[in-house]
Length: 478
Image 1 (tube, rainbow, N blue to C red):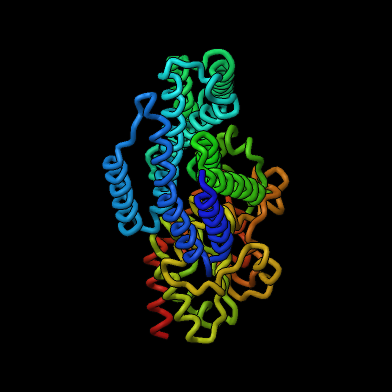
Image 2: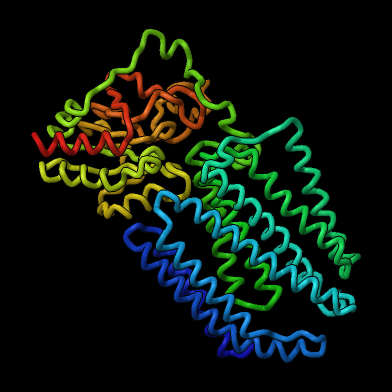
């Protein structure tokens, strides 16, 4: 690699790092995305000179590059990406993220697989031409990339509602462990003793695909934010390993950044749920199907207090501070634009409106932020859980829209609860709480929400979008 190309790749790495840094805030996330995309464009252009030298070195083995096919592939990818970005609704963004992540993992696996098979097909011992480290990188990228591919497809199916419930059977974890052991054994075998055994490699590749499916199938749909983040980190690590395989610095940097940031995000989300990663992956959390009780003593003699839209509008219109807590129910109802309209209408009356965002609300990291950004909710109105909780006792009305477990006081009050210790948005501390729900169905944790039975809570039943439209009409008429 020439020094000039190396400098370009270093510049690309800087662009990637700055892009991720800018994505840390809703205000700058769009610019960060564009900056990282520009860096990827430069990296793609800088790879072309490397391909020429690579082709020259491979002619002795009968390998050459088909530039026309490469251009066709790039154009097709650009078209699919553009169509996806413009046509997919924000409510379906988690599915698209899962699908695109899987495609990235599959591409990384294919790159490593072709490199391994190419070396094996030359009829030379790979160990003589390639170090054990590079061979291990090929196998690692194949394993992690194919696992991410098949796992992401299952995650997509769960987010789409095809396979939302956990699918478990006795001894499932043991069987998965045995499959993983066989995969790792084949990787060691291929690295040290059978570097030209294509059959063993294909078996390893196939088992990795099966393991990806088996790993995600037992996980409930509401845990998909954590799974997507974890699979995203897997894809990043596979790309980094590909970078070592084909000597591409930008791939090493980009993959390492994605892998490390995805891992940190996974751990942070698990912390926000007060659950270890192992519980998410192997606990089949939520398989009970909902409907469990929070405890007979907690709910004895308590009933919910319904409220009508005109009463709710009166409370909101006369408040000084209102906090809105969006949840997955808002996404399902596609009510983000009505939420923005309600916020604007309250703002005209001098009401201070803020939005409390829980880290794991929705079906992907930042799901609520994305939906509210689509509705052009001002960024300075979005507050993280840690910032909003200390001020909640001064809030006149807290409007909960489709959120459940993330506002359940059982996480703070009931030591026997499966969500005890989970950080929540402390909506119950507001002077009045209005909860918008279709029914009294339990959340993902399968337990009753103590918030619904609090003395200061009122339940506004119905579709979130329709209820918000009624609230807005009542406010405008008053």
